[in-house]
Image 1 (cartoon, rainbow, N blue to C red):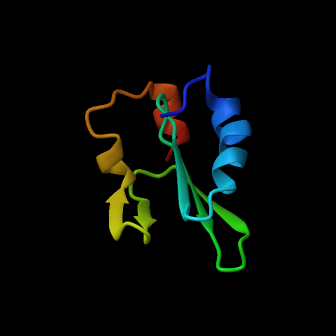
Image 2: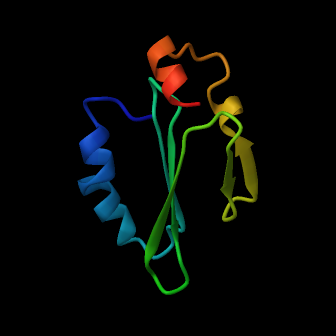
Amino acid sequence: MLSEATRAYDRGQKFAAYKSLPSLKEYVLIEQDRSGVEHWRRRRDGTWVSKPMTRPSAMLRLPALGLRLPLSEIYRGVELTAQRRSAAR
């Protein structure tokens, strides 16, 4: 989960280090205070592509794990602020 304190590090220095691992196929960042998931996937040519998702009906697909998960499940039981919740629609 991303927090204000770790957001820049998780997207920057930490991800840069993880990208150097040949076995890493996917990297997922999950917002903790608003509906938001950023899914990074390594292509066959070694480049990375990002797919940001904010809608609760969006489906997070992790082919490397054979997993499909709607954002609504990720955030089940999490109370998002009304302002953040309306921005996610």
